[in-house]
Length: 74
Image (cartoon, rainbow, N blue to C red; front, top):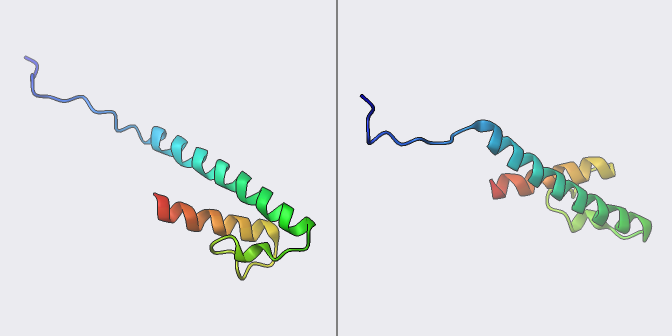
């Protein structure tokens, strides 16, 4: 017999990873555009992004800021 109280849940971890990667790609794209515009106008863009203050390259700063924001969101 089947248990009528058995609740079917969808705890598929792939769904969580897809959401994580969508947030990561969106934030990475937005922060890269901010950093690129700041770089083109010789503005210190590193102070705008959280976690990017001590980075040496644009990729390193954007990656650090995305990971900082994601750790606060998730």
